Length: 220
Image (cartoon, rainbow, N blue to C red; front, top):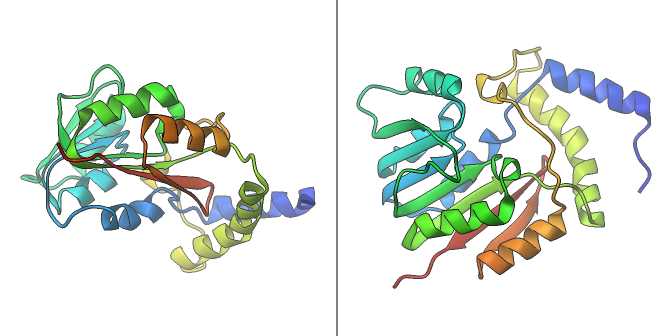
């Protein structure tokens, strides 16, 4: 597949920097559609500024939101209304998760920062029978389909940024200020490991450089 000319890429980069929008929040409503109408306990791993945790709180009896960055949790608490059933915890996703089980576990743009297989196995152990794990993740483009979706996402990203910001330059959303790093696992590796650790999990490649993974643990 022929790459875009470098001058076009630079122009798109400048445009996207002036019209930023949150690619992770784009999938929050989709995440909610994967969940039951009411759930008991929910866990959001890598919660950042807490947008998804607050959305989960509209449907869950209690939400535990975990992030390794205590500074961003200060912002998350400030943005959460008093009395909301959300508890923010500064902890490591592999060694410090509050004890489960949880009826719902969500993990958005965090899994590529962790040992992939260990993290999925850890989440499964914390999932209640009949519970649902939903992941929105990043992987390294590896297949023709990955590269085609990536190419389509470039102009689509600009259009969405323009529309969401009303055609005007906008500041970077607070939810996008956390440190990031590129994914190292390819999409095929992600799919193979997910099938091995979470039999029956459904993975789909998505626009805007993301994949989704849904696993429902069987009831005992």
